[in-house]
Image (cartoon, rainbow, N blue to C red):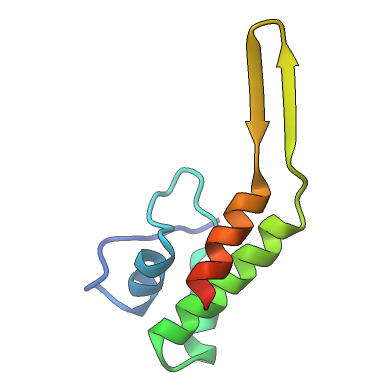
Amino acid sequence: MAFTYVDPTSGSRDKVRSLIQDTVDSGHLLEDAEINWLVTEWADVYDAAAAAADILAAKFAGQADYSKSVGDLSLSETHSSQAERYTKIGT
């Protein structure tokens, strides 16, 4: 899948990526094609970024939080906090 980011001055896609803080290839959240589609649907990059944030909020809201421990080691992932973060960005 395609990921591109140079800086927010290089185009609408990078502006949207910057606004939603999806600027690192490893672990990126949206593909270039998804952001390009949002930019064509909403003329304003801020509206496109808000729509992207809404998509990410819904994505993370649909995933369960979990925590696992074995001895002194523990691992937890809280998708609900990520969903809340993107909900705030989208509003």
